[in-house]
Image (tube, rainbow, N blue to C red):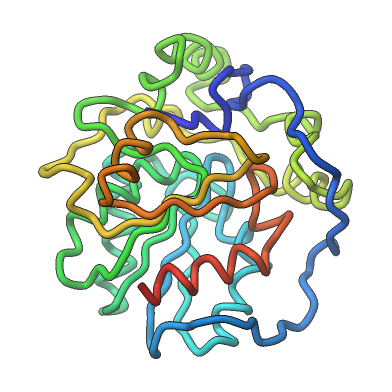
Amino acid sequence: MSRAGCFREISPWGCRLGARAGPLWLVAPFPAPHPQKLPGRYPAPMTAFVLVPGARLGSWAWDGVVPLLREAGHGVHSLTLSGLADRRGVTAGQRTHVQDIVDEVERHDLREVVLVGHSYAGVPVGQAAERIGERLARVVFVDSSVPVDGESFASQWPDGGVALKQAVAQNNGFWPVAPASHYDGHGLTEEQIARIVSNSTPHPGPTLTEPAVLTRPLGTLKATYVLCGPAGDEPDDDVAELVAAGHWRLVRMDTGHWPMFSRPRELARVLLDAAGE
């Protein structure tokens, strides 16, 4: 399956065409204000959150969430995947991104790990979760694709990835940065959209077209799926099946595809609650 960037009807930039229902939420532009303690039930210290951003983004995408998780007393590692942001120029395929995540966990000898993958990053995060063994506490998929053994991120698109592969071929092997209009209707301020566009980098094509490799069913993972969208929006079929079977928990956020920008406090609360399960 694939949220393919957030929507089922796909535009060339990776999102379903059509605006989100609901108001445009007024949120403060980054940098985020000094965090205040979030109400709710928190996991006992120390959870180690590993935050992995979606396509074209770097660790900076989590700047509004990181201080809130740290304020709650936990370790936080926001990761930039190979070939992106400050790691631009590093050759990367799907297996490289999986290894990036595993290396981050092992290099810091992290335990009680909550892996968080947004959008595209759900694919490498789901694979890395298998490989870190007993270090893993939970996986949180934030409005993301999830890995399917033998299938790539691109192949899960409704058109089989034709449009995405054409875009990559026409841009020297990279998925180009999306225009500002791509972010309309997602509860983002003009300042936030400008920040996303100016800091995004073209995404390495092989990471999108190389197949995922899983050694066991996704249902064996302790996982939370965060579905972003208006009331009535539903997850894709395989996620819905995992939720219905009681394997995964579904959490809904009434916001657009980039909740780390539009609703950072609410997303931080969701992550803390997930870690406490």
